Length: 206
Ligand code: GRF
Picture (cartoon, rainbow, N blue to C red):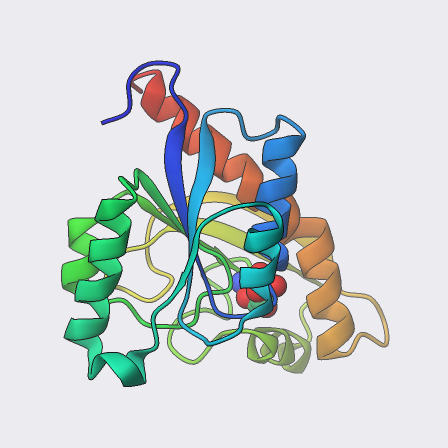
């Protein structure tokens, strides 16, 4: 357990470009995140650009490729080993695409945060990730969408909601233009904010 005032050790799990990871790193530098620090970045995809962002910030990185592990259980055993070696106190899923088992989420209960690119409970759950979320929002014709930070449990996108931010859908939006606006105006704002709030409240004993 972290002692009072010491920064909590954060591990960020990634799969892609890492723009949410970059928002977290920028928020640390700007003092928006003060109660924790990213001490490990793990990717489940070889060569994810998010790893380059971490390396540029001097943060230890690792890759865990499921096909090399030989199944979900071995994948999670290796991941747990890295997280425990890092003395991880908070896990953040930032564009992370692998499913995590109920055993894993129970082991780390209330210590995993995820960013989802919609206002949960809309457009979430199995099969809703990346551009598919925005394609569904446009197909439904919603005028407002946004992003959600939530704790991760055994139900896909089903954990307690920590923060949300709404974003207007503009006429002529494509899935790509909508995704970009949701990232810029919502994801990159609420993920750092939620991380700081969760860690500060935990350190205050709330
Ligand atoms: C984005 O669609 C984001 O909404 C979701 O993962 C995708 C890539 O994020 N969370 P990132 O640029 O790798 O952080």
